[in-house]
Image (cartoon, rainbow, N blue to C red; front, side, top):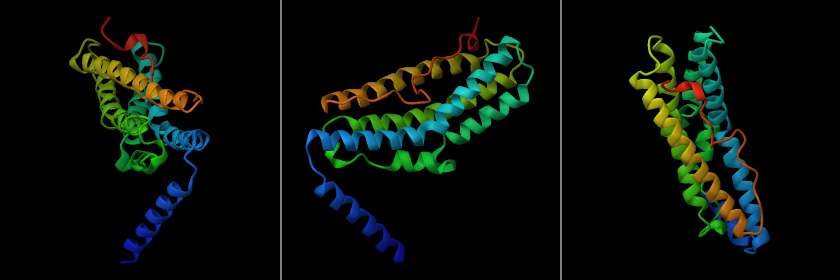
Length: 194
């Protein structure tokens, strides 16, 4: 009962805040920047983990590192970082709705796509990366080909998400810096079949 009352109070405060907040472009842009920063913080460990996993895998596959166990561990940790049930910060980011002042600006679509980028897509990519690292014999394995497709899909989706957020900011007469770490990642060249 106490939990229900607490949740009701949080929702009521949120609604009151949305209703009292000015609905001009400057107010919406402020809402946009705050929401974007929260989403960027929420996705950071997932995007950063994927980047680190890709760099480590590239070094293993290129033969410039023999730290295969470390690379495999990074992929495992990356999978966890991209799973909302295992990452509270990501969970909070993907379950928080954009402020109502941003309705009609495409921000809700960008947020839904960002959730998909992390889970399941980045999670699947991390799992496939782990499989590629475990399959020492062939870089043309099914896992490597699947990974290549997943990374290209992640890159396209990441660019789409960034474009949606940027379009909303532009409509509000503002700008946003790209997510850091980037969600429009460039897959390392040595990760696919030669």
